Image 1 (cartoon, rainbow, N blue to C red):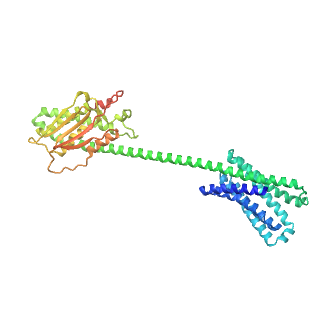
Image 2: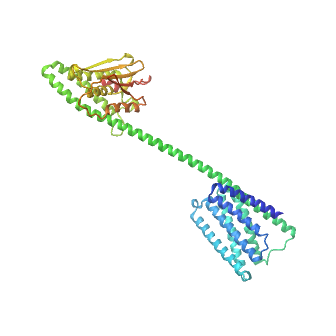
Image 3: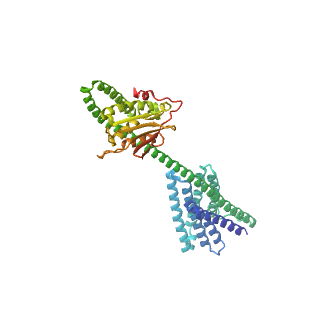
Length: 471
């Protein structure tokens, strides 16, 4: 009855471990399934009518395989590389020694059992063999004691019970060699010892199974933490990539603006100088006024370029200006565009007209500097101007705070090469400021650009450096 109870308990443990292994398919679950399976097979073999050599061979082979698996469990579960390489190397040598002796002894017991058993070599070799197995359990107990958690605690208990089982064989061969065999015991005492041994076996396998449960839980937590860290790392990489992309876009926008300014300034200067040259002799008073307006225009251009230009250390001038460092008020832009229009009017005469209808309510609203200059220049660049068919540019602001710049369409016959830098630069600046992108459309022979003016924060005043652009 006790034997049947042992078989049922061990079979249940083997089945539970096998089910866990079928889901995980890793080494640790497989080893924990094989370990009780070996003890189950040994228990089944005890019911067979085996002679002493065959019984000793099965007992030696079964215990050896179980200890080999036990040592491998220690290696897989506790990873001895993090403690000491000598410990791992020692375990490998122990595994090789156990396997070698097990193969030799089992082979001799099965092939020449009588000669092997009649010599004194077998008891001494067996005593050394079982002492080695007991020592492995003791070392496993010490390694598990380093882990102050349920895994270490249950593994210590299981190792201690396994060590008692192996010590039983050591006691048998020790008394056989030095005490002429163990003392005879009564039947009731033998039955009690058998019950204790069977109970210890079941408790040992149960402790190892509980150790596996806690180890599986630990691995699940470790995988969840690793996945969370991987997710966080990927999110950080995505944010860094997004930030790098935004920086590249911002640098590209700044480069386009500086390139446009570098292109506009010389070109516009040469045309202005040609107009000035024709005024000096014929109309000296207008020439003087032209020079004054030209100085206002270039002061504005140079100051705007200075704000947008990064320093050698990667920072901008006036870093405290924040998001407003490239902004100016609509009043400054309109004052600048009046001077700019005066220069264009001197050149084109009655072929160009500019009308401005902006309420004083919106004079302090903000927009990127040089926006009006880019739009007016774009209109003059792509359309023909003549006294019979003048080019009209209108600047208005509606009740919703939207600035509209429109001009009548009379495109030049000769195609004008354009890379679209002006309009794309304005759009990029609005994107960088997290503002709606300006809308560009054509309606009834009119080219229209509509952009939203930026309402200044109530607690932030525009930088004095920006306010001085129109001075």
